[in-house]
Length: 280
Image 1 (cartoon, rainbow, N blue to C red):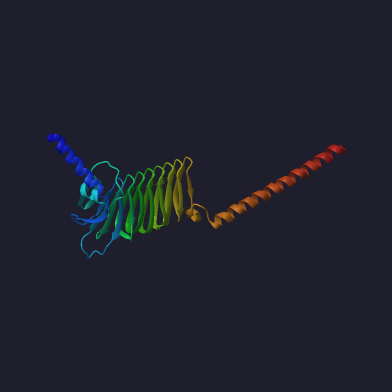
Image 2: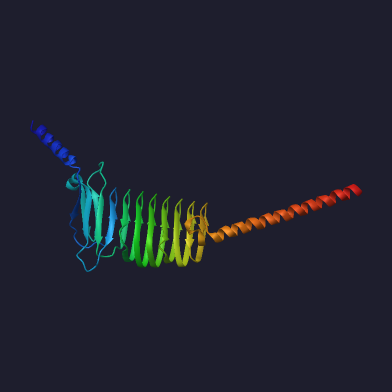
């Protein structure tokens, strides 16, 4: 009887927790400033850069109250990671992170999503995104950007990289840097991925499999194997440029002119052949 009563109390407590579906945005204490972020599962992140002279970085999480009560595990000793205690049918969970210090790395997996409200400044940034994650980031990077993208993940980046960028893309993912020029950029695409990049001083591209790269900037080196492609200059939008269009029209015109000349020559030869045959 004692066991049954305890079990019933336990079930009632779970029911009470789960019935509180009020959405609340609550603050969570951090152990210090954050320099790295690891996001997984279903949690979305919104990053905001704040003045370095202000108070330390802050974290707020918005979700239903029962999730606040039972299910979040947060570690924040320089690297912030928010985990869920167990598998469940969780509602939407959004973490709002106000950063006083620069991030050196961001790692996202699962179906997580990360966005920024203003420009995230950093000397060097490692961005690793996998699974079905999505990242939409505005950045100001003074030295180096390293991107590792796999699975069906997608990254859209705006801002600029005043140093070197290195984009490694595998699977069916997509990197869109059409609004983020870099000083120099190296792109390595394998699988069926697609990358859009701008390298103001130099672009190095390697494509394997069925991947595609669209670039702007001086092409320093290129390597293609498989059914992939490298598309330069005005084709950064994936649609080609006016110059490419006129070039194509010119090629068609030249091809048509050549074909017409060949046809005329053919008929002249046939005419003389029959004349020769008739008289001789």
